[in-house]
Length: 431
Image (tube, rainbow, N blue to C red; front, side, top):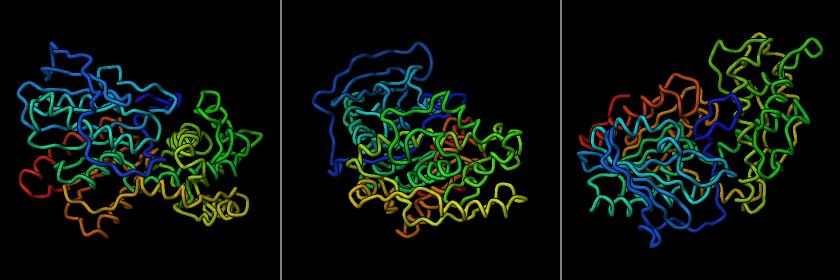
């Protein structure tokens, strides 16, 4: 995954997703147009063969076959790629979101891996699920038979796609590991970045291009725009209270920007994790043009009935000042309405049912700057309401970041091993 925000290490990203096609996913075999384009026999590492190929329409895939295959396959679903980027496999070699290290560790234990580029980039959740599910036929062809067990692993956007498959096809997958994922649903994530943008425009008008739902097509965070944001929120002699808008956004219940406790300083706020979280949310809000294209040209964001309230004050000593600013935002913030057809798209792709039939383990950074940790609580409630809590295990990594940090990768590796053990024994692992 490319770093889209200059100077910020953003791995795979926001699990926002929608789709204009309401056709449900159905059984998918290997596409008739699928073809192998290369087969490599690595001279080192755990792989005896790495097969690359193309499937219709326009998606690419790779299958990693280990020396001493143990009969199991892991299907990896990558995070979001910018909608303006070409559809391609990652460069070095086959690495998305820092996942290659996890893949190679488990390859040494005999697990085969497969993943797809998808047919399109951007917030294409339906395509992500379809192209990943399609890999089952390709893998069976390459391995000369169906695997004994199949596991799903998703990062960020890919977690939503993997969860979608796990809920829809529990007879075809044995378990799922969801990392840094938008598992509370598309709408929950869109609300978060939409509220961040709406409040930022209220406190710092004119800095960001366009509006919450009308951003320039192909818009992206540039070094110049990032510099403008940092300048707007950094206290100066001429504007010593410039950071208050940022602190108010982070203290609003609807926009809990992630930050490491003790890492917020005023002045000097531009050096904190809080600013990284702000810029990350604003960066991916710029992809809203892609979301609008998937919601029939209508607004995917609705704050028409939202009352912004105080959450946890980032700087307790400024609590009364921040409370007054948040109350004032309800008067001055721009309001947007999302029609039912746009909401239906977001509901379909994707709101989890929580009705799990296979074991699911989630792993999430406690201070995830892009897909906030509150997705875990939302998913937990959904699963509990469906009566499937015995099939869900959630783990928090006490770290700041999104997907690609070493602590999360280690937790993913351990989580996958624990998932396999859970399936083998029928005994839920310890948290």
